[in-house]
Image: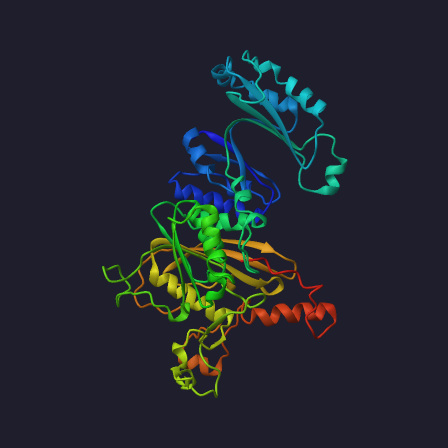
Length: 477
């Protein structure tokens, strides 16, 4: 198959390959590359694809790719690159008379305009006869200089470590990040996910026209917007409807953003309920039927982990009167009052994830994806910390590191129908009733994350009270 050079953005490096593979699956494109050739420290990856059209489709909605080129050659110097190019002179003939321009891009280094022009002139042996057109050329040729990702070594380098050359096939969709930039959004909350990662998650979820995507912890609805951008029908729910509605009703809340982006026809609805006691209808076997069963194509969410937004579920604290909600106040039963707010109890992170994976196993269609954030303590994390479920296959695990803690974007795909299987493998799982009596349950890295988060930074600051000056802001969700 023909070879192509993918030029990634040097940002969110741990997410790039997972997004590229998701897009290949979405477009049903066979993608081949050498796994050892990829590095987070380098933005270039050589891949094999069936055709130029497949290359265009692969990156047409990519967020963490800059462009993809038809690969012509590489070398550790310009002389070796030219020698490589001269082995395939038949490739040049198709572009003899077309208009063209050259670009010089340097990773880990810089080139002045004069230096770029000098480099471009060294490619005169290609003997292109067409006119140079800097604004709207028929073809664009790109020279990539790679100086490496080590700042200390970069200062000592006068020449690049490697040089790549290719013909531009297509740019990616990175410009859409500015469309959904939080600074331009009319309605925000303290848990609104930044646009770039929201769009990456939509790609990981394979959001596309004709599918339904659901966010069970919808908050201010960032994922509804980005999944709908790619054509999916979206809907969400939350135990607290105040974030959904906003403070000013029709002039605030999620509806404001839906109107701002013109997504009325794709965002179906937002609902208020406790996901652990959800009302979604389902037949007893968990299979598809006209009365219920799996119908979500993707679940995209950021579960609350109690730093900025506390995780809650319906319930009463031990010792309170269980009939308290039915007391009449001014002649109206309490729970029927317009200002009634149901009582809640804390929802521990490991319990949230248990319920989330079980919900996904029951309500996703086979082949549907669950994409969610998992908070972890860096020093305590191991691969065993990722919750598992027998119906769900782990597809990607990408880390965004914040120093002492990180969050991981977990992508899972439903591989089999739910058949009354037990819940996720998590901290509180017991190997057997008999063993559990004498063996404490294993507690994974995300167990009691909120307490670990604050105690970690308390100890660093030498104070028993959380110090906002030394606690990095939790990334928004």
